[in-house]
Image (cartoon, rainbow, N blue to C red; front, side, top):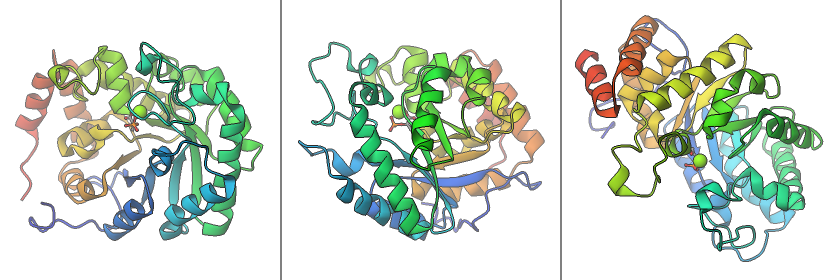
Length: 315
Ligand code: PEP
Ligand code: MG
């Protein structure tokens, strides 16, 4: 659609008055990385490593992981690539990590929690990421999914550091972590907000249940408040805070997120040109004002309507 409308991305995400918002891609495998490089993404804001291994009965070897990660990193030599450690469980079970007998898998041993049960799996993965980082020349950042407390974040950062991965952070997907964002920032180099899960947990609405889509909506003012808290804490302590959930791919919502203070947006590669064009159509002050409108709305539908009514149409 973006190509049909003539939008292209010049490689520098910014507002009309030059406020920088890095525009990055979400990728899951080498093919996705090539597509992201094709649209000129500034880098990768979320590499979902579990997508490489969804069908595996056994843990992939360190050599095999290194080869997969290297293939994803290679198109991004000299650029930022945020590698997420295995986010196994709930909607993405991995046979070698996930206990499928849990009654509430979304609230169970998933994401970073699997690394507490199987510490060696995380260590193998960190070793493979460190090796891929050395051969690819990409600027590798590493982060853990489904972290609930600043203490868990500190443990992850220490473990990554032991493998020489100095730029380590976490995803903010659990409302408790957003609510403790001040303490979190003291422990991490950066944070990335996963609005898909953050919305699911803030709204108590299963992200896979279409019937609840009205609640599972990144425009929900409650979710935007959690984003705002996290972004503000990042700005106060000079830590980059990105958004890498689906919300970043919605051009009007991307403007709101920029207004809430996030410093990067990561999305499916094909969404980048339209998000870039939309950001370029507003000033930073307008982003802030639109964010205030959305925060004050009584639900997602009115937040979306209020912002769309004020956003100039793209030409
Ligand atoms: C998220 O939860 O917003 C996210 C980016 O992670 P995933 O969709 O892979 O759970
Ligand atoms: Mg998630």
